Length: 371
Image 1: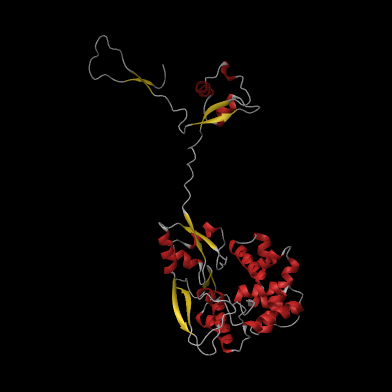
Image 2 (image 1 turned 90 degrees about the vertical axis):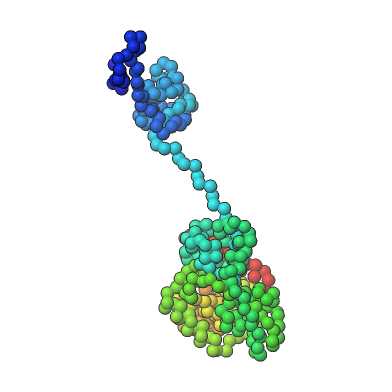
């Protein structure tokens, strides 16, 4: 008698011709379903049964095997029970769109515009939390319901003010006073490097409405100490006489030639960094025309054999050029040298170029061709 068989008790006398109903409960041999296994050299039903938590009898029945399964052919396909739930199908990839970085953008601002977290942007773009973004860089963002929403979100993140050119104003001065880059000011007003300002001329200044804080740039937050030092340096330079853009260009060319660096490369780096503006100081306390941070200034001073003052235009250019010379000698290619100026050569060699670094390199190379 089967141990799982039982007779349902009758609640009334059975008719003479009736027989008891036999109820048999069979265990499910494959509670998680079946899968296909291909027989390999050395396989046998006993080992396969143990591996898949079943019995030889179940395998013989499920696969209609003859001769007790003593002879399995290599390549033979068998139905075997799954040992766990079948893997869930991959979740459909979320729809995404592309946002082109504009002047004043930060990752925090873009995240706020699209109502997503910074972590989401880092993940979508495979960039680190210390990455910088550049004007023109393409950022992957969650796709809005319609393109109109994307444009509205982007527009909402910026505000435009109008300034009137006064006697003695230069584009660089206006950019410094308004806290924007020279490149951004030129783009907003469709001007070129050769444009001449007129007293009374109206200029548009586009600035972000949304920003994480005054100590955040390109998704990276700096300490209060660094931000305070940057503000002090910015205020100091605003009070000092600074070389014009033409004078700064000549200074870079002469310094680059003196130190054996390609003048066009040095010019392109400086234009990308500051627009040849010695008064430019970033929130990260990158100073002057070559945007050299104090720690890099210490390194450059050691290379130069004398103390370099980054607040001085000649010393600032010298620091940047000497650093660039060291990078071009150490890096295996010009592209890596450029990337090293932005990301740090050790980081480039260890982790490769970040997405924003690649954009930086492409931008510098494009500027270099125009020099």
